[in-house]
Each structure stands twice: as C-alpha cells, then as structure tokens.
Image (cartoon, rainbow, N blue to C red; front, top):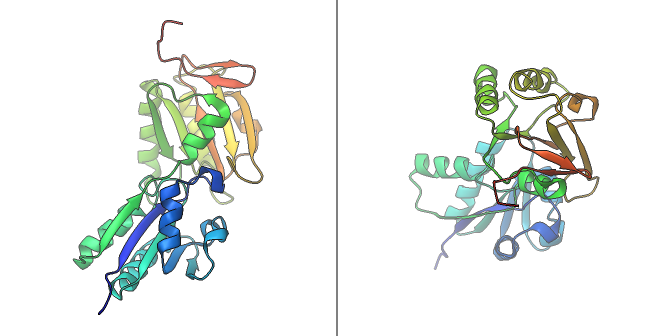
Length: 246
C-alpha cells in the first residue's frame, strides 16, 4: 500500500542549531528527503544522515517547490528548508502557490523559525519594541521605485526599519539611496544596528548612526536596523521605548 506523502516547509532559524525550533528538528528527522538552497543545507548538516539531500543554487525556488510536491506525490516525506521563517521571504508562499496551481492534495505543514531580524534585534538590545517595518532592498522581484516608496512611507511614519538584502556585489546604490531618503525624515544621529551572520559563525555586531552607517561593511548576509525618532543608544545597546512608565 502506497504511503501518504507530505511536505514540511521548515524555517531553520538564523543558522545555529541552538536557535532552531524543536519542531523543525523533529520534522527534519522524520523526512525521507531534504531540499534547499545549498547554503541552508550546510547549516543543518547534523540532520542529514541517511536522508536523500537535494540542494540547488539561488533563483531555483519554483523548481524546488515542484520537486518537493512530486516526491511527496510518490509517497515521500519531504522537508523544504528556508533560513529564518519560511513565511517571511521564505519558501512557504511559493510552495503553497505551486500546490494550488497543480491542484495537489498533498499535505503541507509550515513550521516557523526565528527570523534574521529577530536574531539581529536580540543582539542589538531591544530596537523593535515599537512598530516596525521590514523591507528588502533586493529589486530582483520588486521594482526599485516601489521599494523607494515603501522606504519613504516607513520613514514618514516613524517606523523602526529593518533592511534585508541591503547590498550585494552587483547592487550597491540601493543602500545609499535608502540612507538619503531616511535622512529627510530622521536625524543623522539616529541609532543604527548592523548585524552580519547573527547567531552563527562569523557574527559581527555594530552600533552606529544613520549618518555614518555607510562607513561600515554591509552585504547580503547583513541585517540593518534603523531606529525611529525615539530610539536611543546606551553602552552600545539600542532601545526603542514603547511608552512604559519607567
């Protein structure tokens, strides 16, 4: 009798095993096949023994989703992995869209994970204690004009702003333009946190200001958190007060 297949869409967190949800580890251990971007597969190496492992490069998201469903339809239990949380710039949306398109009845379970912005915020102190916006500066899937509009409106609304994908070798001006936009709404002394490889090997944590943020290394492995008008710095810790009577 053919067993029922299933797809787990798993958020492995920021990378270190200590910050991975137990439910994610259990799902990985139950799986026959683990599919993901090569860099993320390397972060869960201790779970791979005895598994079929299929890794691929960037921009292969739809292909990974199609393969995960095909294998599940053959009766396999499949884990499709994302870093952070799979529903936040991860694979959950794509997998569910492909499932809908195929009119597949395969069971899908989405397992949440600690996001890069959550990990970065913890390392910086408490910069996200009030309303905040998360914006990706990558224009691969979103028009740059729309990204600029979102940055401007978040700046005008005095949101704390977390930037994903702030800079790459081929995409350098976006972070510069973002700084220019936000300086229209915020002081150059506004606290800014820069976190690279948060909670994993090669971790770098920098606290600086909006005026000086571009003096520090920023790349695709970096999350940048820009405070609002009330965010303060104290002994290299960022705090955005929420209004408690302290």
